[in-house]
Amino acid sequence: MDEKELRRYSSVVVDGDEQASSRAMLRAVGFTEEDFRRPQIGVASTWAMTTPCNMHINDLAAEAAAGADEAGGKGVIFNTMTISDGISMGTPGMRYSLVSREIIADSIEAVTAGEGFDGLVAIGGCDKNMPGCVMAMARLNRPAVFVYGGTIRPGAKRRDIVSVFEAVGAKSSGKIGADELLEVEQTAIPGPGACGGMYTANTMASAIEALGMSLANSSAQEAVSQEKVDDCRRAGEAVLNLIRLDIRPRDIMTRKAFENAIAVVIALGGSTNAVLHLLAMAREAEVPLAIDDFTAIGARVPVLADLKPSGKYLMSELIEIGGIQPLMKRMLDQGLLHGDCLTVTGRSLAENLADVGDYPGGQDIIRPFDDPIKPDSHLAILYGNLAPEGAVAKITGKEGLRFEGTAKVYHSEEEALQAILDGHIEAGNVIVIRYEGPKGAPGMREMLSPTGAIMGKGLGADVALITDGRFSGGSHGFVVGHVTPEAAVGGPIALVEDVDTVIIDAQDKAISLQIDDQEIERRRAAWKRPPSPVKTGALAKYRLEVSSASEGATTIPPAWDE
Image (cartoon, rainbow, N blue to C red; front, side, top):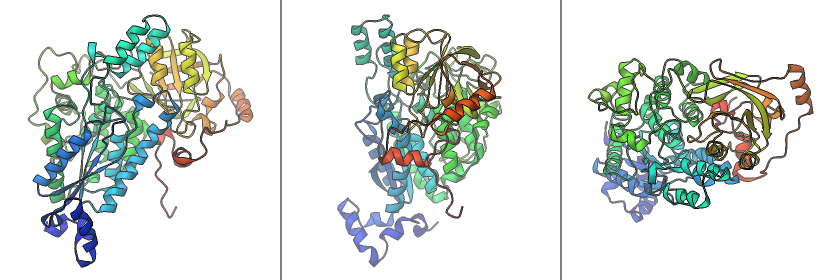
């Protein structure tokens, strides 16, 4: 490939007399004469002081740019945004969380295409900026590498953010006092990095690595570590290699690659948000993927990782024994991964894993195939008269596989949380939180505050929760989210009334409201959609454009000629 081909996009911006003004602007930001003859590599940094997940990423972005420079490119750092789920959780601001995924993808697309970058490194550290980065990569289809900002180190007594949410519930039930709650609050988050269990950030980092869009072990490095610095340097270099080989994201993000990502998420016991995000990423890559694919893959893939929130261990402890690479090698040997999938190394997944050793003897974080935590997926796609278009349950088996209970209905997360804290929820209740879907919230808030309070009050084994919203990766218990159609469009969840009987059956993949069809139709005829809490701005635009949660809650428009 000649020099002009390596600069397929930047040459349009900087070559020729007519682009003298472009070069003048770039000289002011540090370009030399030689830099104009180098491929330009955009480095999308999600740095912000809005969350510990991303507070260090400016330093990592500088390393990625330096890696690109050393490999013969010109790194150009730019910023996109992030919103902290942990900070906005349980507040109206949480409505912006999922919306931010689309904004991030749009902003990276706009800067990369607008500035004519030839390749891209994107560094994400929190839940939504990771899929947002990859969605942009799929959309742009220019050589690109994703870098995970890394997991946080454990707080005192192995605490993390979920410890705080559960401590709130414990205090409300009198199990702990104000001093202990304050002590948990002060010690749970010791510094930079994403939430420390197999919550959404670590789930998506692992999925993206399995997808082939990150370098080996990028998902299993602490935020503050030499390994993560080196990962960023190598990513900058790797993009130049991809440019020379003309390997693009859609060459990597194939149907089989998404199957690999789903399989790894299941084996790790990952977050329900992976369903939303992988569907959205696949849609951007124009790869056919549906929620039922999670059921098909889940039937043959066991849960092997004993990681929080349902298990015992933190991501930092998995890192100590080798991260996810040995797990992927085991899965490849078992025929559970497609080894021929291309990756950002320029090699296949099987080639990347060829020299990976196994976990050390005596470890009990990753279980053997003959002794799994669960023989099939913990992510169950449920259907029934409550969810004709599907719902997503996270059921490890520790909660049981079937729950029958009496509905307690709330029209918002805040109402439900207050009811839990005030002692209005009893064993045998099915908490129904509605009007929290993509259109209804709008923005599809996470229900970590209610699920954390349930666990903190000791009701985790006795209460179920269903919602058209979604869950944090830190949520656990008998929980079902993404109920579609959502309440705001008249889905059956809008018709549930207090004392109705709800049955959730993970084995039969069913969720049902125990009333007859005639009663459902009577309630539907009487139903009126409540007014939206927003009228203008980003949330109002999102409400108009967003698809169903069963389609990834994306804002991808139809083709122009449709």
